[in-house]
Image 1 (cartoon, rainbow, N blue to C red):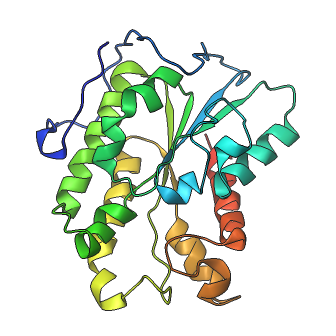
Image 2 (image 1 turned 180 degrees about the vertical axis):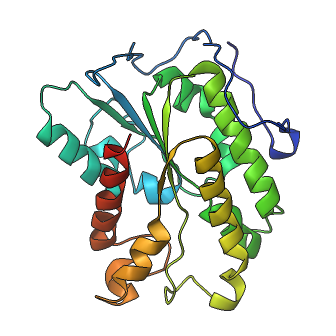
Image 3 (image 1 turned 45 degrees about the vertical axis):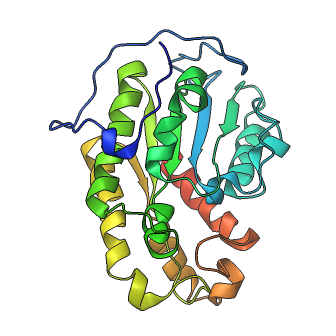
Amino acid sequence: MKFKMYARRGFLKKAVFGAIGVAGATSAYPYPIVNNSNPKGMGRVILFQGDSITGAGRNRGNYYANHSRGLGNGYVNLIVSELLGKSPDADLKCYNRGISGNKVYQLLNRWEEDCLQLKPDILSILIGVNDFWHTLTNSYQGTAASFREDLIQLIDRTLDDLPDVKFLFGEPFAVKGGSAINNSEWFPSFIEYQKAVKEIALKYNAAFIPYQQVFDEALNKADVGYWCPDGVHPSSAGSYLMKQAWMKAYKSL
């Protein structure tokens, strides 16, 4: 399958939610490709996708599975450390492909290399904060409706090639009181992006991780500076909360 660049306005709209089960062929690729189908979860490939919250300073040159520098310094590293530490015989292969600043259409632009070629069994996606934030700061013209369409396109493209993949959708979040969050600008507009992710997770029978609730409840124990100083990028403590919530969703699959 030849890689194609997708611009957001060129996305094909799909009227029906669902999957088309046709596996695609692979092309030349610098990353290790693994045949990962295993009904017992042995040799399972887990891929984390998103923006800087997921990337968390990862070294993009360390792209192999389970590489500590390639996993970043955030919630993904904590999750993978727990998975590998508790299941040394499971032969799990975990990848982080989060890239700072990404919006959902940019994920699709790089989806062949950074998702489909890796053939994940589990695909964890946390995206959406930049799709809204950049309308305030970067003159981005996207809307909640275009975000929804773009995300559906991303999912359908994935299912075309990987019909058995299981999704975990992280809710995009904004922690009130953070230095980057102006409540009058963010709310209620940002809530529409959160609703889109939750509704899509439901329609695709995917796991949903309620990160907004996680951080809202955490503010009862400590202030925003402890959990997520700018309201977007979690601290070490905030990453721990995200890890806990992710593991709960993962165990439900």
